[in-house]
Image (cartoon, rainbow, N blue to C red; front, side):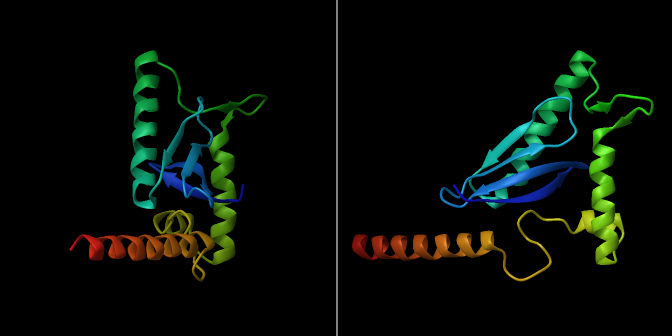
Length: 142
């Protein structure tokens, strides 16, 4: 199975997003939370919405149980795992000559600041095939 991975930020929480290039299914899992929070979508336009629903449900449950949603590192300096993730994002932003805020505000999954990504090429091809198929079907019906 071939997959493409990317990062998506939802309400300030990073998630690793994976695209299965054979099924075109997208799945993701949040980083640094005290539970395994995952989500799925078959359309890129629905990915962020599904992620938001999963995160909101998790945060709601944390409030009900009075449980902290973020994971701590142990040891002498108590800090959150998510802080390390954002430190990496800050390095990436600096290498691009941007601030972390600018990097996060422009962030879109599977759409880097380069040419058309593999994902976009595959989705474009899928849309073309679907369009040809449905156009042919509509011609047969009319």
